[in-house]
Image (spheres, rainbow, N blue to C red):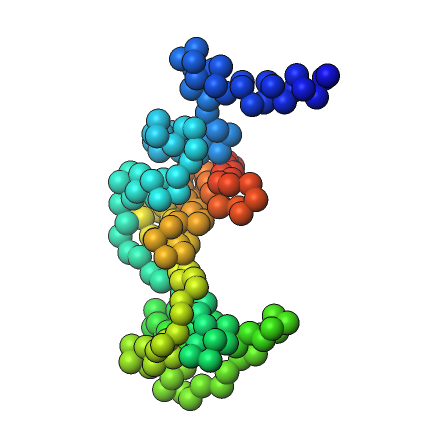
Length: 196
C-alpha cells in the first residue's frame, strides 16, 4: 500500500503543482542559475535544453574566438565496415596550429585498429582527402567539440552530435564559478555547479 501511495505522489505530484500555478523546477536548472544567475530563462526551468542554453550563453558572454578541438565522424564505409574519421587540432610552438587526421576501423568485436595514412593525408589534410574517405559511406554520428574564448576571461567548451549540443561547460575564471551540463543517455540532462 505504501508503494502505491509513493508512486501516486511521484506521478501526480508535478501535475498537482502545475495545476496550483507552481511550476516545478529541475535540479539541473537550479544548478545553472545558482552559478550563473544571468542565464535565467523560464523555458529551461522544467527541462534544460542544451541547444537553448548554448544560445543564452552566447548572448550573455560574447565569443572572441572559437576553435575546433576535435571532430569525430563514425560511419560505415563502402564495405559496411564501421570506421571512425577523427580530426584533431594541435598547437605547435608559438600558436602554430595543425590539423591531424586519423582513421580507425572497428571489427565486429569492437576492436579498434588504426589505418596507416601518408604524411599528406595525416597532417593538415585537404577537404578532398576527407571527402574521399567518406565517399559512399553512411554517417552514423558526427561529433565535434569546440573551445570558445569569451570576453573578460570566460571560457566555454561544448560538444555537438550533428546539430544537438550534448555537453557544455562554462567557466568564469575571475568569479571562480563553472557549470557543466551533460546529456546522459539514461538520466537526461545533468548540470552541476562549482564555486570556489
